Length: 452
Image 1 (cartoon, rainbow, N blue to C red):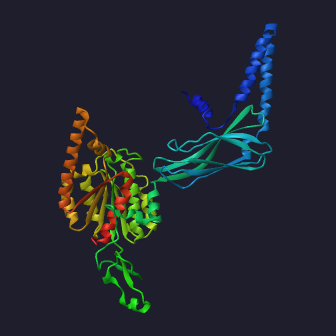
Image 2 (cartoon, rainbow, N blue to C red; image 1 turned 135 degrees about the horizontal axis):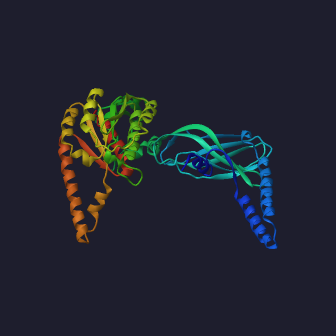
């Protein structure tokens, strides 16, 4: 297709500028054509036919003058700077009509193709008014997107010709991970404090910082009763302690090939990011230092440890556009790099594929050295297909073989996990819905027990 044909085709696809005939004008010419063809039965000359068509065409062009000039229209757009993945947001478009003509319009915003597309949008803009248009969209893919065009078509009252214009509106939007679970933690942290079905309340006696004095309730440790305040208030009062703050948490995010495995809502990397951000929120809210390291074959992003909720935005800006790579993850390289950047004792929380990690024998040597100084925990997403296969009814020979192989794989994985856990390296798997809950629970469990 030549460049001129591409430009012409682009005008019919809501691009660039131009004047286009509407369906109403085509209907008028279709009726006129059939009428003139019928009139030729009475021997009307072809000159009259062509002259009539040209006259009607020129007369229709007067309709163009009854619509606003492009300079009389001011179009603006308002959209959020950040959007969470798969969360619906509202985009506002304003059309200011400074002309003396009302018109009907259609528009297509130049948002990326991966976004939800509710176009074209239509309506009527009155004379000398501002027309507000709102539409909803969501983005299923993280990243930074530039939106610089809005395609606009409008007609006059007669609606015979349609003017087309392209508004240059420079905007950019960042699509970050879904923070729904992070917000849920901030609203109700207790629902995340579940570890093997029990609410985490206990901690080692004498461990932690003094928090406050409160009334004694059934179940409190009698050794923590504050007898001085009890005597003053004539009511049994007890001291309440909380885990020490200022611990170091290092979150490792695997971006290797197997993290691209699709789940019911996104892939493993998406769920790992959402769970990691929830753990970061819990740690930063409690005053701990949080560092983040994303890797695959090489180091993709590293955020040094810092504390405070303002550090959360620093982390989001660094990892919001992480993508799965086609390479296998190099665990040895990332653990070697970690020893050079993380000097203080830290909880190493790795989000990766447990099954692949178990067979990295060389990684075990690095982790044994790290274990002498750091506390290690790995969390991965369960293989639901493998679990479903182990539970299926073996009513056919093929299903019996599939179940046998799946059970064998589960036994091998269990045996390897035991081998790693004997070295003090714990590996945990959870369903995609409970990944964030399990991650936060294990983090708080280790803080409560004073393991750091």
